[in-house]
Length: 97
Image 1 (cartoon, rainbow, N blue to C red):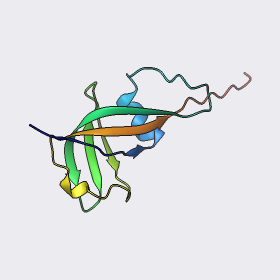
Image 2 (image 1 turned 90 degrees about the vertical axis):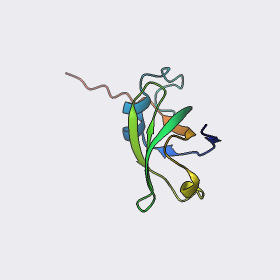
Image 3 (image 1 turned 30 degrees about the vertical axis):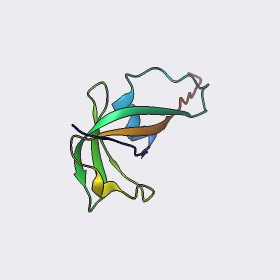
Image 4 (image 1 turned 90 degrees about the horizontal axis):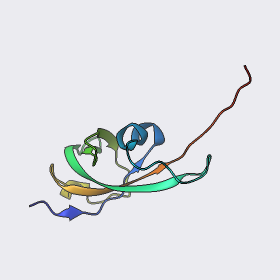
């Protein structure tokens, strides 16, 4: 059985929003970011480019570059469960017609 590895990945809004958008809506007011944490399954890893592909709890798949703060990326294997954290914010722009 895979061990639960504790990794924190910073996903940009553009990358993370399509993957985890079916989760609970953000509770932070517009313009303020909210930290979201989920457990995801590792689907693929490119150590040379520091890219990791994970599948979220709703089955959506995202590939993201892992920052240098994750020092033990070489220990992560396909099928491992990882803890993913990202920031989500709602921005509203109102324009006159």
